[in-house]
Length: 313
Image 1 (spheres, rainbow, N blue to C red):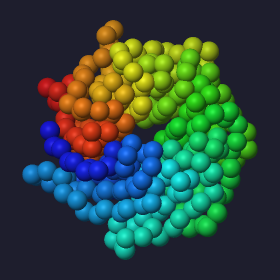
Image 2: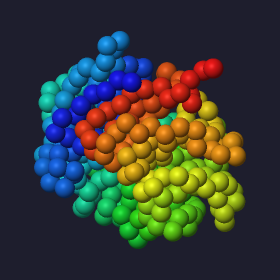
Image 3: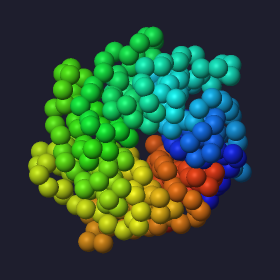
Image 4: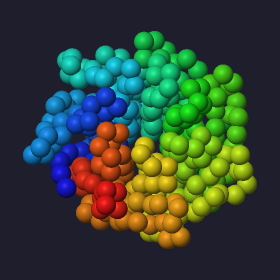
C-alpha cells in the first residue's frame, strides 16, 4: 500500500485522472473544513510512491474536485465559500476561472462524462447549477431539493442526465433539457450523502446515507430497493461503482473504514480497509489499473492499494 500525507489538510475528495493512469488529484481543507484554507494536490504515482506534481492553495476549504473530461491538465474544485474554481496544472498558482454564484458551501462538482463540455455543482444553498468552463456564468439552475445537496453525478449512459442526493432524504434524476426533475426517489430514512451510477446497467443507481445503509435501485422500479447493504457503523459518506465490474461497489464511512461489496453474493461484504484513523471521506477506482483503489480521510493520509478481493486469482 502506498501512502501520501496531505499535511495540515483533511482529505475531502480525490479522483484518478481520466487521461493518465499515474495521476491523482485530492481536494482538502484545513481545520476539518470549518474555517481556514483549502488545498488542491495533484500527485504522480511512481514505482516508489506518490510525488507531488502541483499544489494550489485557496482561501477557503475545498470539498470536491473533478478532472476535466476534455482537457487533461484541467480540474474543477468546489469550496466552502460558495466558489467554484477551474485550475490548469501547467499554469500559474491561480485559477484560470472563478465562479461565485452559489450562496453557501458547494459540496459537489462533477464533469459530464459523455458530452464532456459541461459540469454540474451541488450546494448547501439547495440549488444545482450547470456550467460550461468557457463561460463566465452558469447555464442553468435547478431548484427543487428542500435541504442541502451533497452529491451531483452525471449518468455515464445518457449525455443530458444527472442525479442529485440531498439531506431531504431524496434522490432526484434530472434531464438538463427540462427545468424540473424527471424522477424523485424517497430513498432513505435520513440524509443521502452520496450516490453513483452503475457503469454497466443504465437504470441502476446506488445511494448511501447517514442512516448507515447503502441501497441499490432500479429506476424503473423505484418503490423498493433491489438490495440494502448493511455493515457500516456510522454514516456512509461516499459510494462508488466499479468501472470494471458491474457488481462491485466501494463505500467509505465515518466509521473510519472503506468497504467493498459484491452485490451478486449472499453475503455481499467482501473486504474492509481499516488502516485509516479518522473519518474516511472519499474513494475512487483507477480507470486504467483494474482493482486499484485510492482513499482519503481526515487523518490527512491518502492510501493507494489493490484490495485482496479485487486481485486476479
